[in-house]
Amino acid sequence: MVKLPFKIECALRLNYLFESPYTISRKFEGAHVYGETPIATVAHIRDKLHFGKTVLDLGCGTGRVVFYLNSLGHTVVGIDHVPQFVYKGERIISMLKLSGITLQRRDARQVEFTGYDTIYMAGTCFPEKLIEEITPKLAQSGAQVITVSEPLGAPFEVVSEITGKFPWGETTIYCNSVISDKSSRASAATV
Ligand SMILES: C[S@@+](CC[C@H](N)C(=O)[O-])C[C@H]1O[C@@H](n2cnc3c(N)ncnc32)[C@H](O)[C@@H]1O
Image (tube, rainbow, N blue to C red; front, top):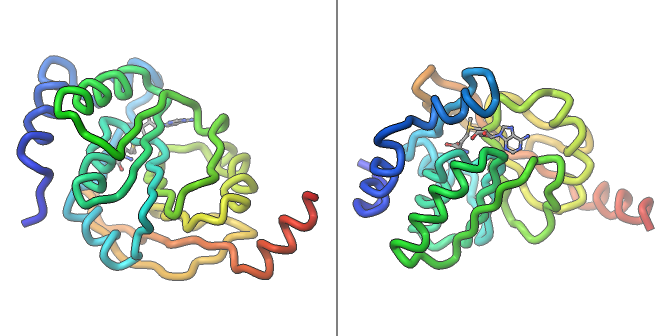
């Protein structure tokens, strides 16, 4: 059975003993939209869609995915706009003296996506408008972008897809990439 390292599981549980991530998220967003990718599903996605060394979890929530990928040797950045998630995650990083892991409090619209091999976006709660807004920046980054339930639009193409299990049911997980001749034309157009 795939699990988070014991110390991290305990630290995460302690972090959310008195207030669940669902409650924190609802207070911040005013809507009940929080959800997490089960660790077994993250392991399955990583295995089948081949994550690169450096990973961004865009909309990282409590950081469960970030901590898991880091425990497997990835350099991971987690970004979320909810301050408590970032603050509580940073507490775990310093308490357990973890390296190769950074959490940032930021809105997805303000993020520079360069420097990542893989970007994981489980934000099925991201509004369509936000996804449209950040798609050009994601495309310029050259990273493979993993999305849940919906693929990204042009200039991305789905290069592979798998089925993954979530608490609410099974869904398709897409690996989106910009094929290289298109990306070189895109970057030439911006010079
Ligand atoms: C469905 S949760 C995914 C958590 C984690 N990535 C996982 O897969 O377990 C989506 C997260 O995206 C964050 N989020 C939503 N809109 C955002 C935005 N505009 N900028 C940054 N984070 C955002 C939410 O706060 C939430 O923690």
